[in-house]
Length: 332
Image (cartoon, rainbow, N blue to C red; front, side):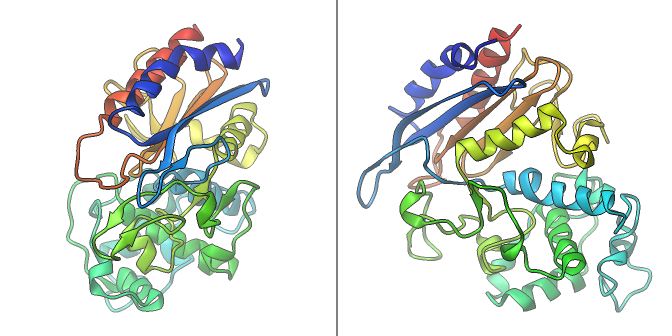
């Protein structure tokens, strides 16, 4: 398989999207042998001034933070014997719901949070309670969360982010990162996201997610920025099994989830032609990465679909599925 040929199969729908609904995108493919190709299309910013998209443009990766930073950090701590997957979070965060020893949050495990098998809600507008990061972290730990069915939850990964800070002794923004990933990028190198009504400006180089911003810019669920090549580097490392500590990400924890990642299932974001051994994840800003271990390929689609506003139909869901179907289909 030649990466450029796989990429060519999916370039047309991305190009059409960037002339209509989405300002710009960078799409890339990497194979298990390390062959890769990427194309940049459209604009990194439309307003207040136009800026072209480049292959080295940095994107707000949004929830890709969960799988490119937080889940790997937790699994490395497991590999180093600091925690076990089935340990309760209280091993790292003994003050979690500290005023109620019987609180259900005190029984949550690292595995449950990684695989979104908890009672916690999908999201909470924490930023509306204030912008002091230390106070908001305390609020997350002491809040009486309303119980509900297991859902994909940002709160799960906020808790994991706090656990990483406690176990390493360093804030998330100071954690080591590979080249091409950062919690504090150069704004001039970034794709713009939303014209934020809360902050009163077009966001460029500052995290789009309001809760991550209020938590100081780096959180377990969002805050990471990166380039297409950094995302493909991470995917290639997983394809090649370069880090044994991360091998467990492939094991299904439920019908649709592995440790951090989404597993292939009907109607998912990765399309219809990938193998059953495919995992992927998306980010609200318009990002996504998928890894097909059966075919030995991975692809990423990074867009700024929320620029200048999230409140419009960009067709991003259909575009992701179309790109995945074409790339994986070309690899058959």
